[in-house]
Amino acid sequence: MSGAPARHGAVLALDAWGALLARDLRAFVRSRAQWTSSLLFPLMLLAVVGIGVSEGLDPSRVRDGDYVSFLVPGIIVMTALFSSTFSSASFYQDRDSGMLKVFLASPHTPAEILAGKSLGAIAIGSLQALLILGVAAAIPAIDLAWQHGVVPSLLLAVLAVLLLNVLLSGLAQVLASRIRTMQGFHLVMNLVLFPLLFFSGAFFPLDDLPRWLYALALIDPLTYAVDLLQLALYAEGSAGYLGSGIDLALLGSLAFVLFAWGLRRHPIME
Amino acid sequence: MTDSSPSTTAVSVRDLTVEYGERAALDGVSLDVARGGVFGLMGPNGSGKSTLLSVVAGLREPQRGEVRILGDGPSPAVRRRVGVVFQESCLDPLMTLQETLSLHGRLFGIGGGELRGRVEQALERFGLAGRAREPVRALSGGLKRRLQLARALLPEPELLLLDEPTTGLDPDWRRAFWELLRTSLTPTWRSPLSLGEAEGPGVREQSSPRLKSLGYEQEGKAALTVLLATNDVLEAERECDAVAFLHDGRLVAQGTPEELKHGLKHDSVRLWCSNGIATALSNEIAAWPGVGAVTASGQVLHVTVDDVHAFVPRLFQAGGDGIRSLRIETSTLEDAYFRIARTGLSAEDETS
Image (cartoon, rainbow over all chains, first blue to last red):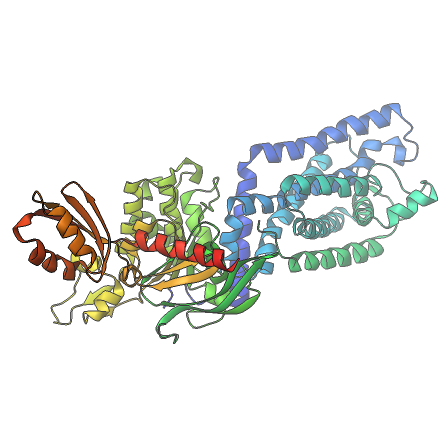
């Protein structure tokens, strides 16, 4: 008889997910270059672009002309986006090192293995995004409104970040099942995600955009994450925003659909 | 063909076909792997060995055919009883040895104190305990192979798939690899004479089918079945109880190494004759049944024969005192391999 004990079904899968998640988190912590650069870049952008626009350009469309504070939700989305993309690329590292074969030869379905791998990307992307929020909240010059109260607003922000990372992880999985090389994956992710980021309202308010650009923003899933984070952290009211209910419903359903679709894809093994 | 009942057969494959686009990597392969021995898959590069292993490992679905593994169809539940050592190292260079084994154990549902115990034991058994906290990237090729074997054996599988596991290893490491595999997994056998446990080097070096045929009874855990893909003919001859030759995705021969060598006129005798009899003896020998090529070089003859045991007595009858000395060279699995490969190629040439 086999010496492996008889853990079955959900317990076996949960344990495997825990193991895969712990492995990816450990690798992330050990990769100093990855976490320092992914934290420093958004903070640098926040400082350079935020202060630059506040001082030099016309920031009249944002509250009190404080573009740095306005930029915080957008920078959080951008951090999640970069981090999640980077972590999702570990799929290729595991494929090229052969680890993916080892995982797939274990007593789990490919979907369970992909879900476990995705958990790492979601956790790392979320942690980094929330770290940026923590740093931003600690800077006295940044004025966050926390309109629902600090704890409820924070919970809403955490939910937004988690849903965003689930969505990004699903998108990465769908792309990884079609694109053979890591270079190609990064290229396509950047090609898809950069325009999505620019049209999401991360860098400028949507309400005074031309109609065609506003229409583009509405079909951009990142718009709802930015809107939700702005409502949770930056906005003093809901006027001029899409609304938390719409954001949660659309972001949540899209994240669920994309994630489920991604798990159904077969990974490219060669 | 062996009995393909689940109790005696570890892997049973019927009419297995795997296609990569237009090319058939496996083309209607059928074979049975008996439980409790080492079964070798041989064949040139691209013959389908690794593809067959990947189907058994559950990494690839065949287009046609049936696979039974330890009595069941391919499924995650069956994979719990199967270990794999892949051709490539398949290790995360940034993880430590301990983390590598722990992760694998957890994927196989082993946790807590049992996992810690097994990891510790595996590191000890494979001589890796002193390096448990080092990253994998610090290991030599030989140690990486050890770690892979330790990882594959951690869940105590019933079937172990080895895909060219000793490729790139020097002879010392190669021997160490097989010794580790044999000594750590050979079950205890009880002698038919009830003399107590029949352990010891003599018994451990015997294959399971051979011990069974001698009346030994296995004790303790079930014997491990090893399905080995290799290009190393000497390794296959030394380690395998049975061998299948694949060529271009098709099974071209299957049997024990002895069976596969049978019929080769490659047992050969080199003899040194006294002056004057070499030519006459050469002519006489060439006419005997079961004799293949006879070549003469001065007073030295080289003769290939079907059955060296029948040939030598007759040779002394014919040559008498004229034979000064002789040397017998028996055929190897390598000879069988080349003959079968040539047969496969020439058959294809004829059909194309």
